[in-house]
Amino acid sequence: MKTSIKTISLLASAALFTLSSLSAVETDPVGYTTVTIKGGNSISLVGIELLKAPEFTGAVTGAGASTLTVEGSDFDALLDAETSYFIDVVSGDNAGVNARLLSWSGDTLTLSDNLSPAIVVNSDIVEIIPLPTLSELFGVSGEVIEGGTALSADLILMSSPESEGLVRVFYSNGNFLDPTPGWRQVGDSGDKGNLPIYFSDGLFVFKKSAGDVDLVLSGEVKMTSSSVVLEDGYLPYSTIFPSGTTLGNSGLFDSENPENSLAGGTVFTADLILLDSDGDGQTERYFYSSGNFLDPTPGWRQVGASGDKSGVPLPSAFAVFNRNGAVSVARSPAY
Image 1 (cartoon, rainbow, N blue to C red):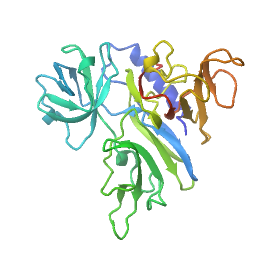
Image 2 (cartoon, one colour; image 1 turned 90 degrees about the horizontal axis):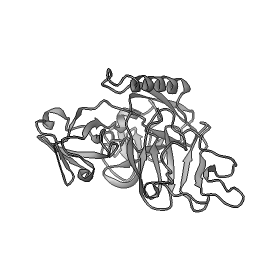
Image 3 (cartoon, helix red, strand yellow; image 1 turned 30 degrees about the vertical axis):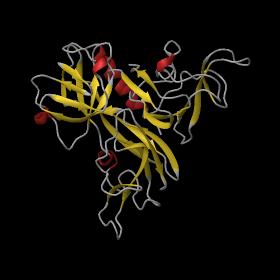
Image 4 (tube, helix red, strand yellow; image 1 turned 60 degrees about the vertical axis):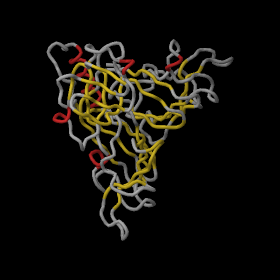
């Protein structure tokens, strides 16, 4: 599972051009990337690193408990009730703070979290960005993964706004009790094709069917930072930025800001990062070593291997085995 080298080069060049031409360019660079999903009872990590274009960009004029106001806006006319969105703060000292958009009325937005402490009214700029859905990314049976029953179909494990933890979804080809083909959740009824995928979430794809398949993603390259909450336990996350992210510059460990960092330590105490850096379908385990008698220099290490691993690139997604409690980390693009 990997992002193509050609695509990375194109995206990096586009990003650098935009950074040097901000006065002339108003939109983020657009590109595409390819993620390989391994087949034959393999599990791949997949992240959606490219965003849809913002539906709205503007300055916040009021902030309350889990609400934001943009005076003069008519969000009922601007936004689609059938689409899921997130709010992204793109300017100011707290740029990168984000939350799901739950609802709206007139010029007022209701969010999943209280962003008011991080908002400077009449100054900070926010964007409202649509989230992709399960059916938009994976289509129907045979386009990317194979359908069937909950026991036979390829499975996707993902976070859902409707429940805590990961849910298992699959494409049903239809059966006697539920004849209509479509996306279903194991243990739950109803169509799940419109389940949104949050931009910072990763996916586990358990492809039982034989053969690798390429998932081609397109959209805008994120040029601004992002705050990401890494929950307790074992969960997948998107790398977010499609070019240049390594363990060393990922922002996952910050010795100067331990309250907003994964925990370092030993292989037995540190939080672990799991990823497939070489696309062979096998995940490697990494951790930030605080140093020991045999290896006194702090730094990123791979379980079972020696040497500094700070330059290991992050593919489209990685998993975190967080042993030490939820933290919010600051992620920034390397371009």
